Image 1: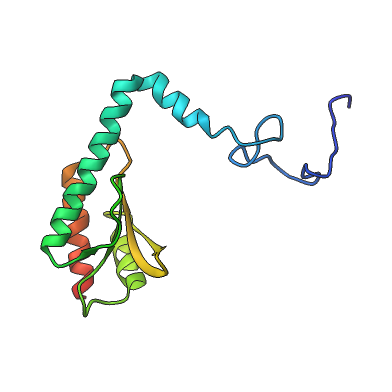
Image 2: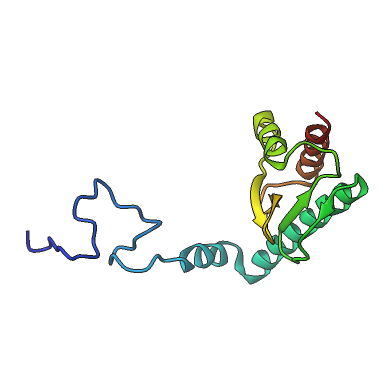
Length: 145
């Protein structure tokens, strides 16, 4: 019982500890752990290559979607793309539901400048250009159904 500690900021009735929310010291999350482990595994060059590849994947998605009449709303150079379909398409949430129901890709509804958009993120290390092309195909089908 010497190590039992009670304080107002600690959840006294917690059934389990959520390591995403609390560190061992019940303090701030160790957000740097993900970066530290990535750098330890891949090194600076490997980490840079991963980021550059993710940006190239998003650029590919942007090029393909723009050619099909979709609009890109963000100008970020990161691996996140906010898009809206051409006029006359179903609502954003309906398109996202269709994509998720396909089981072939994942996108999300997000708010960008007080407007609903489809958020595409390509940061997973195993995402391929073929995966991006499949996502674009599914998005295009979803916008006309």
